Image (cartoon, rainbow, N blue to C red; front, side):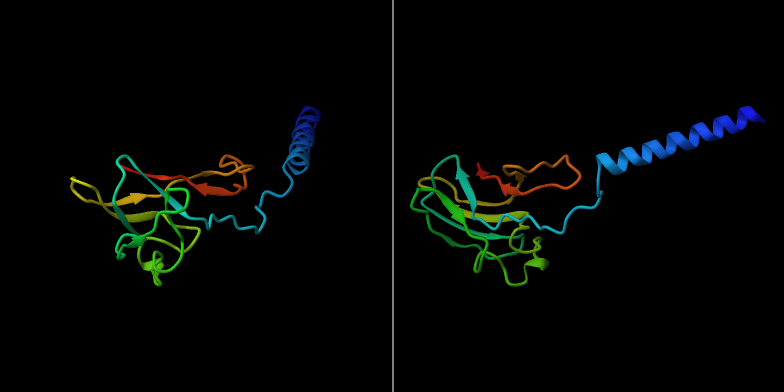
Length: 145
């Protein structure tokens, strides 16, 4: 009987120690109510330079003309007319949560590009996907073949 109580006591002490370690080492397993969203432009990278580009965010949207930026890149802003007003019905939740982009591009002496591409993200500086609470992310350039 004495032996059983020693075992129960040892298991109880071990359980309390584990609980203390979890509380001290990992305070607050819930993530803070901070939202991280990349509201910047989504960059398009083409393997062969197009003459003109039209794009929109979603699957069933109508591509709108995109102007080349001052640095010579094709960047699509997350705003109207590229972001449909009813974006939750077209594969997106809204700015900062885009998942797909529809692209139409005219190329010299080649067939036009008409494609729906996935938009991927990666951790921004200071962000980590493997932590309990992921940090800020940024959209990776969309490579259009």
